[in-house]
Each structure stands twice: as C-alpha cells, then as structure tokens.
Image (cartoon, rainbow, N blue to C red; front, top):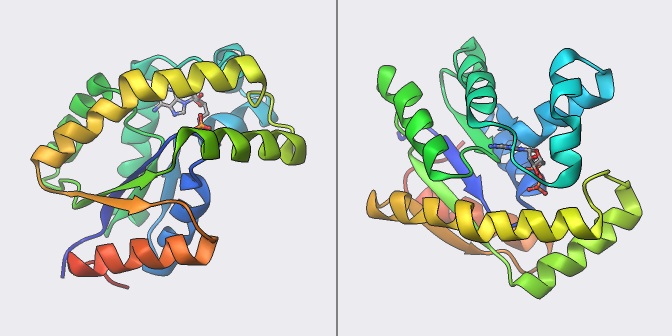
Length: 195
Ligand code: ADP
C-alpha cells in the first residue's frame, strides 16, 4: 500500500479545492488548504488574519515563512500521520524546498501530485461565476489577474520538479465534478493509492 501524501495543483478556478475535499474524504485523510486556513483566520479576526487580509485581498502571496510554519505545524498533528492532501501549498519553488525539508525530517515524501489541467478561458469563466455566488473578497478582476499570473510564473514551475520525481498525474479538469473526480481516483489507484 502506498501512503496517500498528496498535493493537488491547478490554476484558480480549476476546482482543486472541491476535488481536494472529495479526495480527502474518500481516502479518509485530512485536506490541508492554506487558502482555507487564511480565510478562516480573517473571518475570525485573529492576529494571523489581520496580518494577511490585505495581502490576500490583493491577490499577492503571503510570505513563505509564515505559510511554511502553518503547514509544518498542521502536518505534525496526529491525524496527518497516515497521509494528507495539500491544496494551495507549495506554490513556488522556495516553498517546495521548505516542504521537502519538513517531509524529509520524517521520511515521508509526497507520493503523488495531481495536476488539474483547465484552459485559462474556462478558469476565468468559473471564477467570475464564483465571484457572483460566493463574494470572496479576492475574486475581483485585479486580484484574479494577479493570482493567475503568479500561478503561471511561480506555481506552474513547481510541477517540473515533481515531474522529474515521476509523481505527477495530469488530469483533465474539464467535465462534471463526478467525471473529474473519477479521473483522479483512477490515476491514484494506478499508483496503488486507494481507500
Ligand atoms: P486561489 O487558488 O483561488 O488563489 P487559495 O484559497 O488557494 O485560492 O488562496 C487564496 C490566497 O491565500 C492566495 O491568493 C494567497 O494570498 C494566500 N495563499 C494561499 N496559499 C498560499 C501559499 N502557499 N503561499 C502564499 N500565499 C498563499
């Protein structure tokens, strides 16, 4: 059996948050979404929330050190010992190096990276729909443009690193939620990752 230590990567609007939660539920592992952690802190008005709100609303990245410390603490909790799914971290090469550091300490490397591929026009359409439905403060035109551009320049290159390690499964993210989920589950099963 292969431990599910997973990362899901995809552009804004690719559906990675939704699929990430479904995968985590199916495999009974915690989903760790840095975006969700930040949003919860903003909502609760914590010190962390106050620190990051303006950064997130503008579509910029929260400093690597701050984000890294949060993920490190979360992965050290008991429920992550048998596996986890990361969503939204790492998002640049420096964070890949930080994460490698945390996981190497425990001899627990990532076992699969799901790349959710969605054309740019499709993800922009989905984001404008989400903006209307959910009213997320960072789903405004300027912030979306900035996040997509950071995705292309900083996040997409992390896939090359993981591709070299032979752990990336590219999954077509266009289709119904169930169709895309099936594709992901099939790809993971081919690596021996099952519930
Ligand atoms: P999206 O993928 O639509 O941008 P997320 O929920 O993944 O949504 O992230 C929302 C915001 O949270 C990001 O724009 C960024 O400001 C912050 N954030 C999330 N993850 C990270 C990270 N790994 N490093 C730095 N900032 C992050």
